[in-house]
Amino acid sequence: MSDKPIINWYPGHMNKARKSMESGMKLIDLVIEILDARAPLSSRNPDIDKMAGGKDRLIIMNKADLADKNISDMWRDYFKEKGIETVFINSKNKDGLRNVMPAVKKACEKRIKRNEARGIKNQPIRAMVAGIPNVGKSTFINAFCGKNMAKTGNKPGVTKGEQWIKVNPELQLLDTPGILWPKFEDQEVGRRLAYLGSINDEILVTEELAGDLLLFLKDNYHNLLKERYNIDDEAETEVDDEVFSTHQSRMMDLIARKRGCLKQGGETDYFKTAGVILDDFRSGKIGKITLERP
Image (cartoon, rainbow, N blue to C red):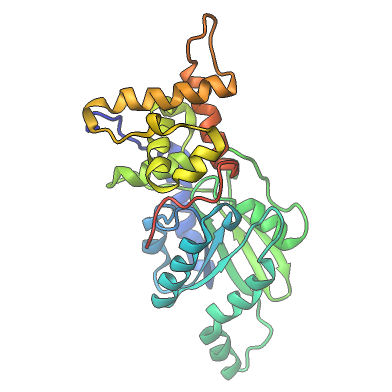
């Protein structure tokens, strides 16, 4: 599989957004980083760590309803050991949002006490909301504020510029565009982000991407894969790299027949089949899945 296409996506507007975020860091007290609970490390932008410096930090694991809860518990412990406040939420149904404001105050506890010692009271916390594309930053902000303050979409790159949003007298949020980093040193990271939809599908070979995802599911979520697509054991037999493409095609052929993704003459429409598989994963229809462990 060494001949797989390299995955990278860093359009010009991301570099502009990065520079704007660097300037915005001077104005804020706290960085709220929104991660995808299905890939907590892969969805962390290392550039945000570099820009944030000594700022207080809070991690919000969005889309927790789509993740494997047992593994999410491991991630909670992982970040706790690193001294980083972490909240798991589902922005769409507002589950877990009540825990965000207490976590904000806890993350800024030292700053709040320092201000109080200086006689500074009731000063609002100014927080930057940062994260990679399509991780749900704007959906979180709208749910947290209780009204549509930020533009949302199901494709990466919807938020184009920064905007300040007053949540309550205690908190102001700086919404920022989703940015990636110029090069994925580990292509597995790029592949996981592609599965999640954080990279523009138009630059990807989605047929290969969906095939890779099927193999991951076969190895890690065998029962969920069988339940969703009724793939038989013969289609899931162990294979080596030399017959990877054949095995990949065999599973996709089965799914195509069951989902009606066929061209005239009964041939598999691999592009359409790939879209079905990726959509099923991203929407949680296959089941609760996490792509990486601590």
